[in-house]
Image (cartoon, rainbow, N blue to C red; front, side):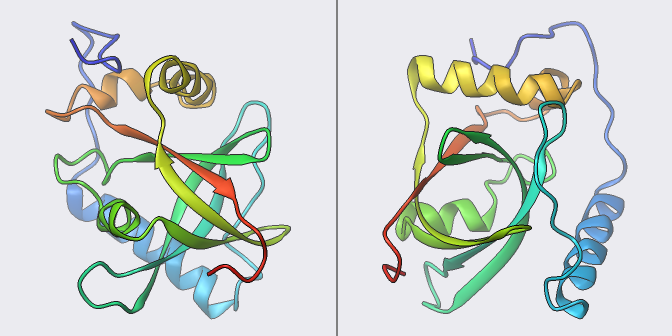
Length: 161
């Protein structure tokens, strides 16, 4: 049984895929057009924040960026490798699997990070933390045929990306 399939019998309905993609495109446009002054926010105890993650493309070798939701776990940033709850793994996660070093821009600054997937008890604990700020998390996760990776971004020393 998948660890994130805790709401059997409760169906989740997402907006149409085109709408989800449009919403994220508008969010990225606001971030870019404001030159990073708008579009990112810090998490709170009850709400996730947003960050811009810059990865190295696994095929192109070029810098790629994506805006993701995150929560904090001490010095670590934690996000979910979901692609609008579609079955396909998100490109940014595949890029991090190939090249785990990345840079993140947050509402209060930037930092270099190294990505890894949480496992076992850590994954369960971090999934529960996400659930606290994302009420339909388990229901949406059941829409995917594979377990959603919980991605931990650990701080790295400056200048390592």
